[in-house]
Length: 313
Ligand code: NAP
Image 1 (tube, rainbow, N blue to C red):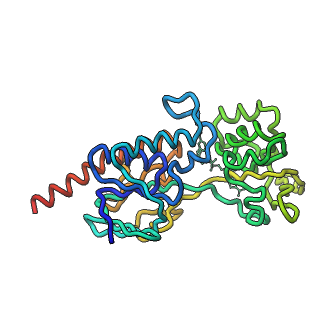
Image 2: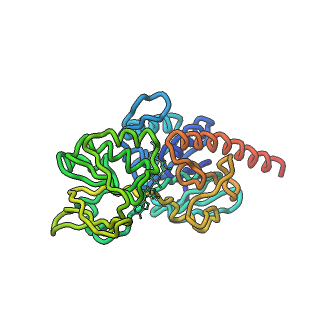
Image 3: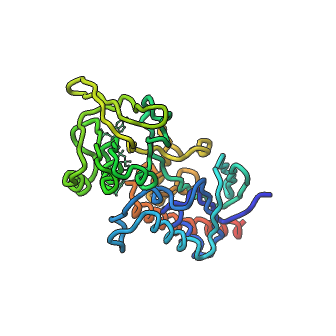
């Protein structure tokens, strides 16, 4: 049987949970659907130092606090993987792997996922030394040598986190300048057991029958191959949008990100998008929360206009 809500939110990260807080506090019935645990990428984040009101807080702790706020006014949360979203005008249908929901408003808050680098050995050793989550797997490499691939905020921040656990961290980057924020760079440069391997293209992840032993790299300036020994390889080479199941809705750009205006409204009336999944997002927790507040407020106005037009008709 189809379950009906005023608002269905796809994704329960910071953006989705904030939209849920606002919408449920405005007395709307709200369901958050997530294919994983609420909190999204916050669960994979060590320390968060740029979220207002906290000098520093662990990502999973912030996720718990946001979840408590988001369900306080009655919003519900279920596990489910969205397969399709169909627009019927004033109502929308959301089809998950095991349920069908109807809503007046859909909020896409499905976030983004760490990209794979796509080299030989990556899939083979995934979970056997190759990881995309330092917070989840870092402890397995206590006092060992690890490598981090990438030069953005994720790579540098997680390398700093790993430096507290591992004996030594090598950051392998394909250029000789970092994309990460200056403060993160400064910290990494001053961390004793972090070294940089510049201008290195990752060619393969190598290992024995059981686990990873090294990364094979090519120096793009010298055109020379070398080996970086490591028992843990942490891949942070960017992110891709989680928009599977949304293709038919007509709200995605050619890379799969959702396009919105500044009201978080997509080009389909009654479909909003918030947080990292948005094309123009700056991909910060605080920004995701801001997006969620905007959508959570404006979707109420949209539902009011639907009710008004029904009264007039
Ligand atoms: P990102 O900023 O896109 O950086 C990806 C890094 O991986 C870049 O340095 C890139 O190199 C490198 N890379 C990409 N493809 C590669 C390949 N095939 N082989 C080797 N290296 C490759 O991704 P991110 O670090 O995951 O960050 C995503 C977004 O989240 C950013 O907007 C970031 O600012 C934000 N973020 C913010 C915080 C924070 O503020 N605390 C923390 C984490 C993330 P090039 O530099 O050469 O392109």
